[in-house]
Structure formats: C-alpha cells, structure tokens
Length: 147
Image (tube, rainbow, N blue to C red; front, side, top):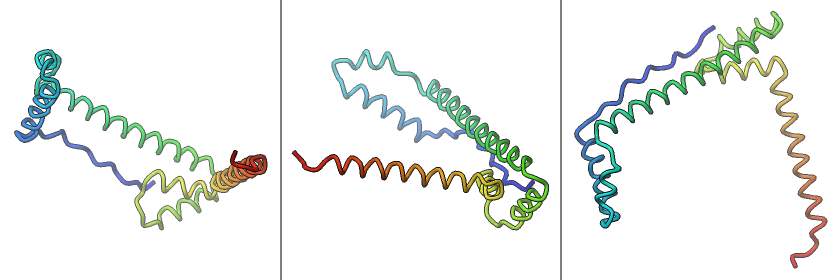
C-alpha cells in the first residue's frame, strides 16, 4: 500500500529572542496590577520551567497527531480489506493511478465509493436536510405574525 510518510518534527529551538519575549510577558503581567506585583511574581515560573513545559506540550501534541494518523490508517485499511477481492483490485488500481497525496483520507474516499458508504452518507445528509427543511416550514406556518 502506497502512503505518504509523516515528517518527524524536530525539537523546539530556543533563542535569546524567545527568552526576552517571555521575560517581557512576565513583566507585563506584573505591571498590569502593580499592587499585586509581588504576589504575581511569586506565582510566575522561570524560563527553564517554561522551556520544560513547552517541550512537554510539544511532545504530547506530536504524539496525539501521530496516534490520530495511525488510527485513521488502521480504520481505512480495515475497510479496504473488508471489500471483496474484485473491489479491492479496483480500489488498488485507482489508488496507484491517483497522483494526489497518499493520505488515509484520500484512500478512504476510494474505499467509500466502492463499498457504498459514500452514497449512504450522502443519502443520510439529504434526509437530514429534508427533516430540517420540514421543521422550518412547519414553524413558519405556525408563526403568522411578528407580535
């Protein structure tokens, strides 16, 4: 199965400009309430602690995205292998001829076309649109004046 590899993210680079911006932020927070500047300063954390927190958030964010991407690939592959062999071959031919990015969303489009899920979603969306339209029309008929 062809796919687009996800790029590895490099660690955050810290510069003196980032540190200066962080220090200005701390000063702004203290200057916003001068009577409580000492208390605010006690609650603020250092640049080293901020770097640690940013690294931690970055690692969690990258891992969440990798997990999401892996879940999407697993689901679309499960749907692909649930197709009968003739439809699998047709999907594979379409996938190999496709010039766009080899992402799980694009493969899901081909699989959904062949297994009928796309048509079912379109029909469900149209049915929901009709229900909403009926509800709006019923409310419009009840509301005859703007009093």
